[in-house]
Image (cartoon, rainbow, N blue to C red; front, side):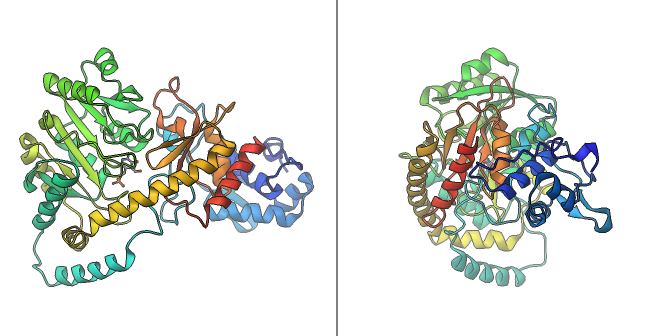
Amino acid sequence: MTAQNTPEVLSIQLDGSSVVHIGDQIHASLRQAIMDGRLGAGQRLPSGRDLARQLGVARGTIRVAYDRLIAENLVYGAGSAGTRVCARQFTDRSDDESSFAGPLAGFTRPYSSAPQPFQMGVPADDAFPAKLWARMRARAVRADANSYTTYSDPRGEPALRTQIASHLAVSRQMRCHPDQIIVTSGYRQGMMVVLTALCAHGRKAWIEEPGYPLGRRALELFGVALEPILVDAEGLRVSDGIARAPEARLALVTPGQHAPLGVTLSPARRHALLSWATEREAWIIEDDYLGELQLDGRAAQALAAGEGAERVIHVGSFSKTLSPALGLGFVVAPLSLAERFVEVCAALSPAPNRSTQLTLLEFLADGHFLRHLRQMKDLYTERRELALAHVSEFLPGSMAAGLGVIAPLPGLTNDRSFVALAKAQGLAPSALSAWYLDRTHAQHGLLLSVTNLHRDNIDAACTKLANIVAAH
Ligand SMILES: Cc1ncc(COP(=O)(O)O)c(C=O)c1O
């Protein structure tokens, strides 16, 4: 074994008295060494036999740890060349100044796999109306196949846009014409259309601190300068924004239900934000991802409803209300920008495929969506209560926040390494600090989504989490 990859260098220190299984400890240490770059792409792991001997454990224990790393696509078996680290890993080193590797590392979700306990950004996996959706989808595919072989409307199917406009009138108190609506594949395509239409490059934007990392990244990718503005119990501190960056012409906000703290923008702050936008001719991008899923009382009306709405671009998504696998969302353009938005989607970014849109059309028109929303709110309320009760037992001070729980990690100043350990055990909490742009603002803690915690898995998931907390 080279000096480079001894157990000491890899920080493999086994604690025989810990409740965490020895194999799990080895796996977590190796995983951490890969994630923070001590084991780089292509580098060879010690042979199973060598490592087993050095650590005084059975070879089978090492084999299981390596197999888990292979299953996580972190390493690969290279035959006689040994087991090597895969390329293109994100790092989660907390001193990494790269804005890409930093915030995303603690946040990047497992894609295309079953949701794991505590995983953010996914609805309940067991409550999607799969049979009904499949039936409607089959009908929609037939209708689509029998329809014209011409280009479809780049803004999305007219009948779907009409349905979305009616739904927004009821659930978000918005008055908009279907021609202001553009159907997208979700929030991310929505941001693409919005930022292109606004020629956002070179402008400055207020962003929420903490705030959704991919929203922030979307602005960065467009060359927008970011000004992080703290969020408190009333939401975005608008006066801080005015004091710190009066020249900003954009604000990206989650006023209905802040992500991830769950607060709703207070009426006073709402008024201040809309007045600022009107006076400064600035644009507010309203990310309404969680707006409809308010569990505590009635949902506040959208920022794009009522006075000042002409400065607000409303971005909606069906990812959390239905499923991110569908890839459906929408943008509501203010009247003054509608033509420009249509140009962008016609030339660059047309609405997604017609049959998915037709399925959603039927789902909305037949009243299934409102019923589904009601059921999901009841389900999440129950799951949140249950989870909060469990988690508070070993992490006192935990609080309900949106569709999850925020848990403090007393005495711990690196929530990302804690998250890496939890991930190695099949849990997917998120690090609160990864949602901050400015490290001096960052609070450390765990974001624990409750959407996929139910009576069958909650005990096991919370016990695992409690054990990791205890081992710390
Ligand atoms: C606040 C917020 N906005 C938007 C999104 C993404 O939405 P979409 O899947 O439509 O891109 C997420 C996903 O987690 C989110 O947390």
